[in-house]
Each structure stands twice: as structure tokens, then as C-alpha cells.
Image 1 (tube, rainbow, N blue to C red):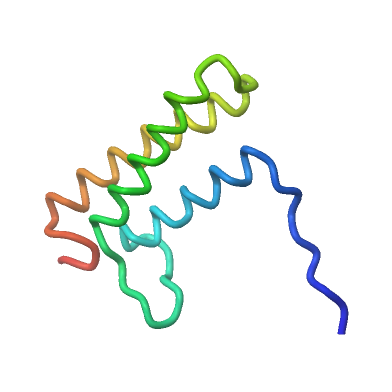
Image 2 (cartoon, rainbow, N blue to C red):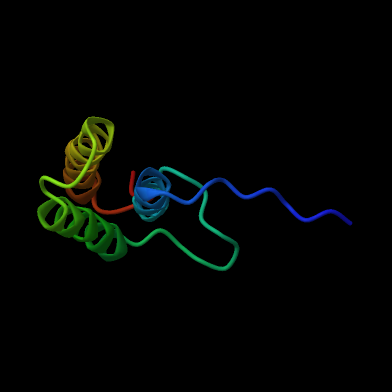
Length: 91
């Protein structure tokens, strides 16, 4: 059996992983088996991205800065929407 080919690990790949996890916890992506979306975990992922943005200021490429800024904008807006609705999965 051949080993899976993993994507190159770089800053953008790392950030995309955190973004994906945040969307899982917001209820916008299917969670891994045995887990449930959780708003507080989504908030923690957003906080982590904010920390990365602060600590890497001036050290990222333009594309990396844009990825982080756009992700934070989108996730913050989505978080507020989900929170107002009553959490992930609320009608």
C-alpha cells in the first residue's frame, strides 16, 4: 500500500487547517466522527488566528497577510451570525 501524499507544510497550509477547524466548530463543515460543533472552540480558533496575525506582523508575504486578514474577517462575521442564532445547529 502506498503512503498518502501530504501537502507541503507552510504557513498558509497551517492557517488553512485552523480555518477549517473553526468552520467545523461553527457547524459549517462536517465534524470528525464522535465530535460535535462547539462555538467556544470556534472562538478559540479565531483567537489563535488573531494571535498569529499579531505575532507575525511584518514577517509574512502579501498573500499570507491577505489570507489571514480575509479569514479573520469571514470567521468573525460567521461567528457573530452563529452566536445570534443560538449556536451551531440552532434553527
